[in-house]
Image (cartoon, rainbow, N blue to C red):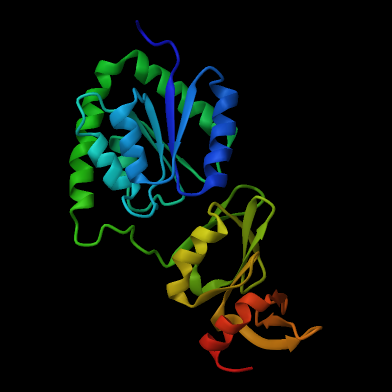
Length: 267
């Protein structure tokens, strides 16, 4: 008997990201059956054992990453539709544009996901026309995952958005600090401009740590080259004063103080 419900798999190692995407998709496809995977291997197990129609796939996951998982899925005789849902677009932009059904960039928006659902429904209704895309995706991913370094290339610039939606490309050296505020993340430049960033603070910490950025508080990531002073605050705690245009002062959590001392020397 033919299935009437669409089966959607969400693969992401971050539980909040899975929950947010599932909630937003649920409003767009209320009758769909949803499954979750925390890494690439779990995603492959779901696809191997269940009739999954669509996989929303993050790239940067521990163990088997999204690119490797997508390559394996494309080998199946009945591959699912693949939608990359990730903050990392630099490594697979060509695959997204030429082969994958779609891609959505964190933080997700309902308007963008609504467009994705239209494409999903159309692709499922015309499944035969999707074979060429799957073939192109397979070819690209085979090249991507067999490269010497399959890790997405580390750019030295970061996109930020102004209030009028103008996108600004900011060099890492021009970033003074980054802040997680509710569900949004902002960067502040050395000139004092504040921009919205489409990444989580955890993702940015991983990306920027090799470039002398350090988490000094659960909500703050700072450019070590921009630290001007460490100021005693109260009860043995400190604040970090930066050398940016506003001489910003940021609290230094006790749990991060020792790491800062190791990075910069005893203060």
